[in-house]
Length: 356
Image (cartoon, rainbow, N blue to C red; front, side):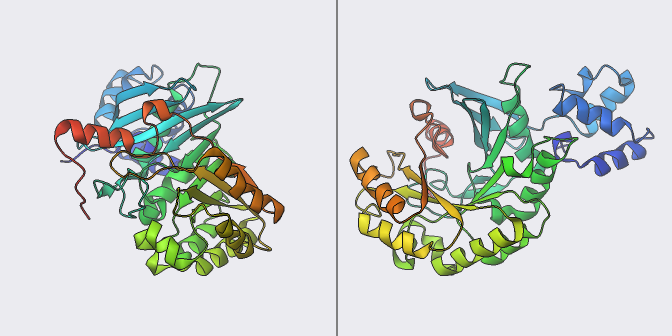
């Protein structure tokens, strides 16, 4: 299936080149991107300062969207979970999370996931394909249109379905669009990429891209054996190598690295493991996000009790580690990674069989 590439995935230089190919002036690129990112236009035909014939040609050559919002669920806590259907019929999820003055959108980078984290719904149906840069940015645009005109997305986290560094080229391109003044206009410190650390070399490469975004590494354990139980694909990279890459990223970008630690009852929640984690991170300017497991029926794992979560965090605090309790949002609308898509697969008879 051949689908026209959406405006969202173009750099300004690429869009200028497209207009030249169409026999138009390059400045039209700035007009179009202003409509898309500032005025929230949903179609090229609504761009009233473009000639009618150009609007029609542009809608055919590169529409504003190649995807659509297929389902929307609003949580009691204000979070909004979206199922975004792609042009080929595949689907991904993104979640808008309002908190105080912050308006954060969590976006996906792949259809499904190949990492195999034992607690996550994203990978239950395996990996289908990578997203193009435009398909990543379109999630940001869909979320933006949920907000009143006077509000805007303040933060983007690449923490939805998929492993961002496994789709490196398209993800970096999407980050450049989100960071650019003509695009999402989000400062690098407002962009976060979450990775299981598929390779330390990818983290080093990211540090050299000139976009000092925030890096979050999904650790979930401080030793290799336990981490392999939680993330089966982690056998290729040691915990020590990941922490060393985090130190290099901190030195290269000046950004503190976040380590994510999902607490699973009876698996990695023993306070002795918190002592081990504190020793591993000693001397590194970082913080730890402690995340009680969001249960998935098909998986059967459970979160620790609140007191057990606090006991784990207290060990880290007493060791001098900056630790945050990342509280569950959108649980009443299945907003955790992969849950809504999994429900759609169940409903369509697609099941949750693994595809790799």
